Amino acid sequence: MLYYLFFTNTGFNARISSIKLMGPLKILDISEVPSQRSSMVVTRFAPSPTGYLHIGGLRTALFSYLWARRNNGKFVLRIEDTDQSRNNEAAAKAIVDAFEWVGLEHDDIITYQSQRGEIYARYIRQLLDEDKAYYCYMSKEELTALREEQTANKERPRYDGRYRDFTGTPPEGIEPVVRIKTPTEGTITVNDSIKGEVVFNVDDILDDFIIARSDGSPTYNFVVAIDDALMGINEVIRGDDHFSNTPKQLVVYEALGFDVPKFHHVPMIHNHDGKKLSKRDGATDVMAYKEMGYLPEALLNFLVRLGWSNGDQEIFSAEEMRTLFDPANINKSASIYNTDKLDWLNAHYIKNSDNAKLVGLLEAHGILIDGHDKKEILLDEVKERAKTISEMAALIKEILETPGIYDEKGMKKAFKGEAVNVLNTFAAKLNETKALHLPSDYHDVMAKVVEEMGIGFGKIGMPLRMALMGKLSGPGLDTVMSVIGLEETLLRINKVIERDLQNSAE
RNA sequence: GGCUCCAUCAUCUAAUGGUUAGGAUUCAAGGUUUUCAUCCUUGCCAUAGGGGUUCGAAUCCCCUUGGAGUCACCA
Image 1 (cartoon, chains in turn orange, yellow):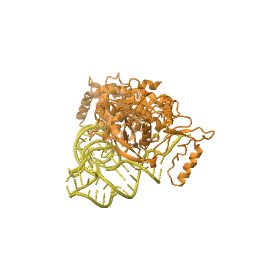
Image 2 (cartoon, rainbow, N blue to C red):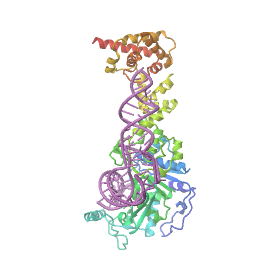
Image 3 (spheres, rainbow, N blue to C red):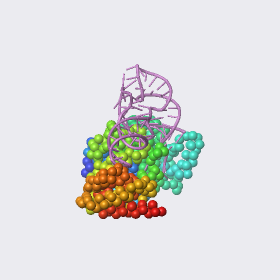
């Protein structure tokens, strides 16, 4: 009953001229058939339920979404679950969750092919009645045998049409499949905005393909065409891998008298081996990027530039994408999935995020600093040096926790000569100075020690860095001291001095 | 193998017959920084090959080579 919800009130008018109502068995519900293409752009994303949203899927979904939004149209979601799998709801949820995370919104309710069996059955019935399709009683064994013979003769494996005009008595014990009558000669032209007009020779690619299996269930190329037509999809943006199926779908459009949508076949995303990106290529689950600490705006920005461009522009806000995206600027060649640029974009978006937002994102990575009185100073320091939120979380932890281990090489390098003396002097100076709050307060004390002892900044920098961070690299020392406070600073200094004495004693 | 598509720096791409072939990322060097990172500056790196057409070709045509997709009672 879902499908009725879909097509009521959507403004589709009857289109009787090209659909002949015939046969006693069915009455076509003409209210479902879209008529003149409405001027509104309607795009769709039609994944099969694999349990998660694939990174390549997200890109085509993004393109479809952007194009619909740019045209004030609709972007709808359809789950292609004609076959197996009972956890379609869960799969749909995974997709919607991922959409939600990146901020893509689909319109209308979600369509499930598994719930539309009646519709497909009616159209199969219709084609049979109109003699545009027929039952084929060939067994799987016979089919295999035929194919083997054809292959042996170096012919293209194809159904030979033996039941096309069959009028005799069907063989016993065979549940027939339904095949559609395809043209036997001539050409089919696919008009694609990206590939141009591609002409297929019917003899090279077609045979009477199956539209209903022996158990009555419809097959992919049949249902896509029906669903796209009934859902009013007038612009199909999908992966390149569907391109060679398109002629078959065109046959279905033709047989049913549906308007053909505009096609945009987007080139694939390849992995490092130059092959189609698949599950085996590591992080292809969109939600994995959330866990790794990527921001959705970075991921979208990265994906929108994969196969599409707008001159030299690299940075796109969501708003800019929605106003600038145009499938006319989609590249013709496949692109390789390389996340170097994603890291750069992510760092860029982290640097430009406000701290309140970062506080929230860090919570998911186990860092609770909302109550910290120096959180602004801390975040300002740390967001300049993290490529991901998880890196940021790790860095904050390093700052906030007293070092447990000390880099040995660093210790040797930092604690030559007067280091302990310098640290003691510095600690004493800190103790006698009042009102230490800001990084600049601590910096002033360091400057004073350097000046009074007549040494370079490095002489205090290195041992102090070992004291505070346990290693010789990291964030600004004055900032660290400001964030952890005087007490913790003194504690860390004493700890590293003890540590050094132990080492020297050994 | 048949059919179809594709081919500019390592990677993402710009240049729709006239540019020293541009930008970004990566990488390298320098500057900034007490260190690291950020940031700034500079540098390295490409029209797959061969033929045409044209005054002029990355761009149009042909061939070669390479790559990809697809050929199911999967989607």
